[in-house]
Amino acid sequence: MYRQPEPFLEAVKAGRLVLPFCDDCSQYHWYPMPRCPHCSSDQIAWRDVKDVARLFTWTVVRHAFAPELADKVPFVLALVEPTEAPGVRLVTNIYDCDPSDLHIGALLRADFRCPVWSDTPYPVFCIDQTEMHPRDIPLESSIKEQQ
Image (cartoon, rainbow, N blue to C red; front, side, top):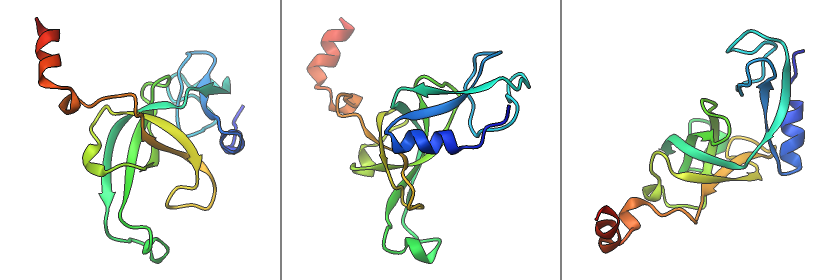
């Protein structure tokens, strides 16, 4: 049965991330649609996923492409892949970081607040502070690990 994105929005209000999941082929997908894009089944359910994702790609928006964004630039617009839903990519904002600290594959944590483009809460992401970028690991540690 086709499900509109209301379950997604309701979960976001509760601080949870849910995605459509096919009960027949056990695959997550995004955007919600009446049939699974992997196997065409209509057995779609909403399932909770952890609030952890990896950065797939990003850009820093420096030019307001709409008048209502003029006071919000610059901001980071990104595609992230939830770690429990390989292949699913969500368009989102990255907050609370210097864009020069971003790298493909960076571990991110969801926060549920209004993104740049909306007044409705949505999962936005921040760098998971527990992850160290390889350039932040002291050289001595890298050498010891290789021995």
